[in-house]
Each structure stands twice: as structure tokens, then as C-alpha cells.
Image 1: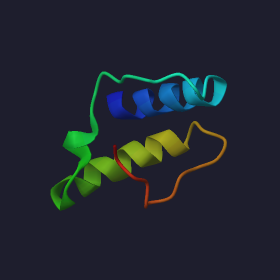
Image 2: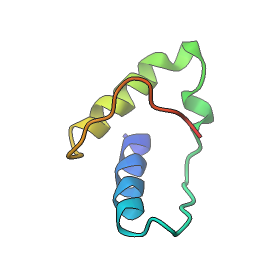
Image 3: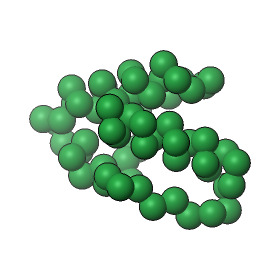
Image 4: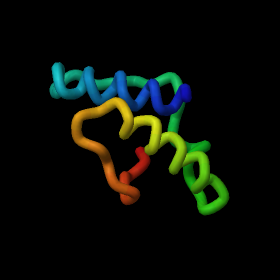
Length: 62
């Protein structure tokens, strides 16, 4: 849930302040790799329940 909440907050901040950098508490390292696909899917699913425009499965990780 922490990754999902951060993604939602960062999306809202980015939409309101597109020129301001955002530093997150969590990095995407724990979401990378084939063995983390289940966690990525859960984060994406939770994120998509909150935002107006859902994201697809091919979201890039920074």
C-alpha cells in the first residue's frame, strides 16, 4: 500500500506542479525483476482504483 499511496500522491503533485522535482520515500528497486511481478501488479491495481486514468501493465519504473 505504501508504494501505491506514494504513486497516487506523486501523480497528483506532478499534475499540479509539473516543473517541480519529486523525491519519494521508496524507490522502485523492490518492484523490479520477474520475481516481483505480483507486487508490481498489486501496486498498479491499487493505484488504478484511485486515479481518473488507469495505467496499463507496461508502466516504466524509475
